[in-house]
Length: 65
Image (tube, rainbow, N blue to C red; front, side):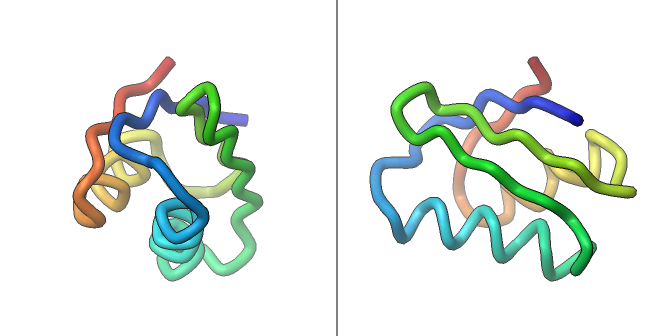
């Protein structure tokens, strides 16, 4: 399980955008978003740099926790 701190997520649309971006690259990925904490937990074959890149493509700032 990889944990990321994501800045800029404010609503359900943000959650869907981040989830869909990760799952588009890895359809089997499990993505859990804690909007209040600004955290995204990802179980995936993708590397952490790849996940950060996908999140950034959606317009959010992401760092590995």
